[in-house]
Amino acid sequence: MLPENIEFVPCDICNENSPVPMFEENGFILNRCNQCGHFYVSPRPSSGSNHGSEEEIPSPSIHVSDELRRKPTFERYVNYIKRYVPKGKWLDIGCGCGTLLQVASQNGFEVEGVEISPDRLAYCRDAGLKAYGRDIEADLLPPSSYDVISLINVFSHLRSPITTFSSIHRILRGNGVILVATSELGKKAYKDEVENWHIPDHLHFAGPNTFQSIASKLNLKVSYVSRSLTQKIVLSEKLYYRSNHALVQLIKMMLQYIPGLIDLTAGIMCLSKGYRYQRHEVVVLLHRRI
Ligand SMILES: [Zn+2]
Image 1: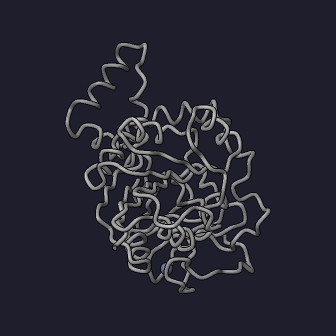
Image 2 (image 1 turned 120 degrees about the horizontal axis):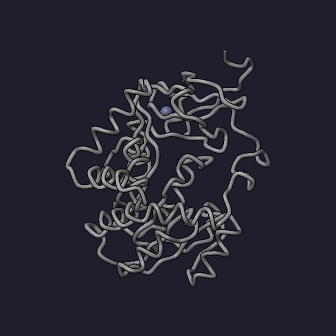
């Protein structure tokens, strides 16, 4: 049952107010925009509510071990970028404890980060990284000054993706690249397919056309898209640490080195859990046109 008297808000991407309700969590509705297929939350939580609250943010010591597990993924992101931008200035928005910045720096980029959590910001600065605690929508960063701007698992938290991407467009150089990694839903979303959707900490989920729609509004060009089953990403991250059990380690090595086995296993996991619409982790590169 959906709560009554929900104040539905227009889609942030296409501005149409034609929401199709998916489910309720914590008194909020996740809608799919009937016009552009983007997923977003109604009503908007008021500022000062629990959106992005500190108590939901793990401490840097927990977060950094999570980032280290994802280091092979960050290395893959840097390799994507180097195909288009071999060197230059890289800004990571929502840089956490700075692991992606460290990887980019080791690959010759001049790196800076933005992080709103004071603990993680302090962690980055203690590690010698240049990091800002500022809101990038406040127009405080200099225009046309970055070659690469990344948002890794940040998109879902944005209050207004169009406003944030407009700000990013302003500080990106011509031919510069935006790297986005986030969850992408398909035609529908079911509450029981995710243990906790973290709504309203999460306010947006990409649909299949979300980034194409953002690009066409802001004079950007989508130059690369890669989709992986969310279950495959979860499995891949578990392979990072070596197991003390010989059989478990053997299975891990088989998953890593036998082509296609990890995709097959992820597909079987989705089927066995009864997932009706598969979720993906999407990586998108958008170029700023000159
Ligand atoms: Zn829309």
